[in-house]
Length: 304
Ligand SMILES: [Zn+2]
Image (tube, rainbow, N blue to C red; front, side):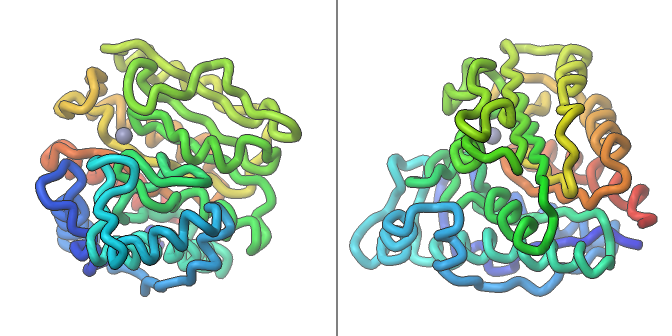
């Protein structure tokens, strides 16, 4: 059985102009998914702003919705552009994650790749930032829980810390957030001491690493994946900006190591639904090759 696949042909309407996070990123992945893997996108859904309230403050969502017409052109900084179509594209990306949850639930497949933009893991409860408007993976976790998946494990291997995802689930013991990221890189959060609070204490695990980490050291970090937390579904913030040809970080992870990481995740949680959601990755050639490796392994493990 093929992996589930999601891609938005209208995502160019989130027009970032001269920026790292551009529509070509998802277009080259889409070409690859269709031509090499014969994957077609599931139908997207526009969703509602009320669904976004599950993870973001109502006032933030409403501000983004009316932002462009009120003259807002960026969120916090020029990193995060708000163009005329941005709200609808970002809402559709976050809300369409529900389609994959429903397909998992119906037993069609246990593997998925969500080729969506803008990325989401920097979007906190009260604001977007760092190219992210709404937090796609966090809303997918909420949808998953509503459909009966009680415990959700989020693995985030983007080179940047997913401060937004951490923020949304910091006091939650039903969503375990595990992140590996460069310590001295944006957004400068995610120290090992940030472990969650209240009921969520012990359900956030940060594995920051120094610049120029080796493949071996990087893969070893994943030995710390939780042993006591038993997930019902695994969601992966797949940020490919840790690869050797990326200029946004000093990490130099090889394609071989990336393949080993994907294998490790698929083997460790073999019997569970596993979805990979695109986060970072800005060198188009490197991004294409990285997603090729991911899709190849997802297809190989989509027997279920
Ligand atoms: Zn990143």
